[in-house]
Length: 79
Image (cartoon, rainbow, N blue to C red; front, side, top):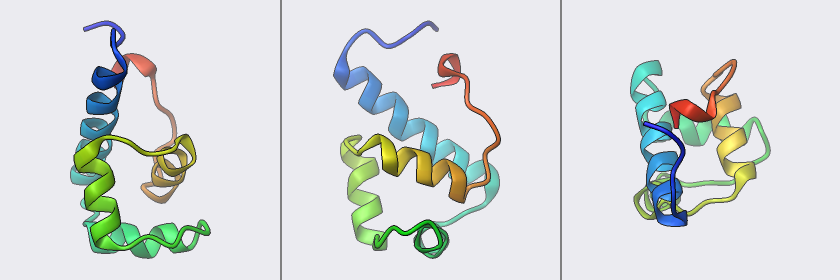
């Protein structure tokens, strides 16, 4: 598939990637809120929903989500 070519494509792919990882790990939005608190994030179910819907979020949020989902590694080709 190759790397994204535009910012919008990166946003869409990053959002889809996180949603897919949540589904794979069986983590709901409510559970993600709880897990992110352990990493110092004060998110709500609604705030996470909106971030993933828009596809715009900070790299720190992405990294914290990956940690919260206990994802060991990510290849950029997979996003």
